[in-house]
Image (cartoon, rainbow, N blue to C red; front, side):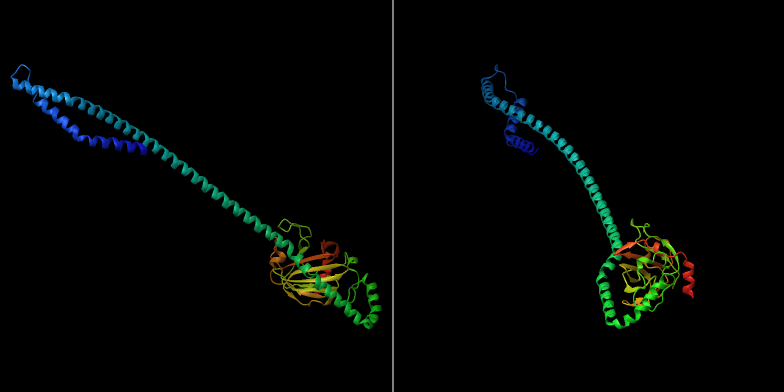
Length: 348
């Protein structure tokens, strides 16, 4: 279209440059029309004027004709150029309209793509956070047991060293311990001991729950996160006392994250008892406790870590776990049937 505009300007410039010549020719033609030459049958002076006019016209007419033809050609070319320019403008306007529509479509597609990417990123972040939360929940208690392995070993070594340092006393207590083991099969052993009176693996069906309450979560049940419980959850009363379910060394006693206070008992025979969700601990780490000895007290409300497993209870909750060789096992085979008799004896 730029070339057509340049050609139009060139034709116009050519017409303007010949405007003076055309004006003279038109003026001469007008004068001849107003004052035509006389006929030949007149006076000699008029005949001379007629000849001169004829000579003048003979010389000018071819040039006028050529100029006229050139002018007509330029005018036709100018008209054709204007028509071409109009068509090119229409085509350009149509192309601009199509281009604007295409740009709008591309902008809409880009907006949709951006929205889809943002939604995908949001869903990926939600899934990542969910996976991290589940991983942290499932590994918290396992991390505690693993981190305390060295301390448990040290405590065992310290107990062995104390036994070796008190060999004389051990000899005196040997007979008493034998009597205690014999008595354990039929009754609760006495409490004057510094080591378990019997192997923990021999105690299924003889232990009482650490506290009075209602079991609201069983071993293997869904904990609400897609995993099974590795222990059981007991709903207790506010301020309830937590007792040692068996003889053992206090391998750990103290707070842990949002589980409240926890106590880990080394009951020997490669077994451990984990109690979590308490508010106040009454025994220090490293101490030997006997079955039925008070360990801690429950608080006013449940702790998030020990009872946030989507269990429907607003009461304080005690989490109980029994481990063998570092792996959780079902604690139900260890409990005796008469929960009420234990509660009555504790109250007494």
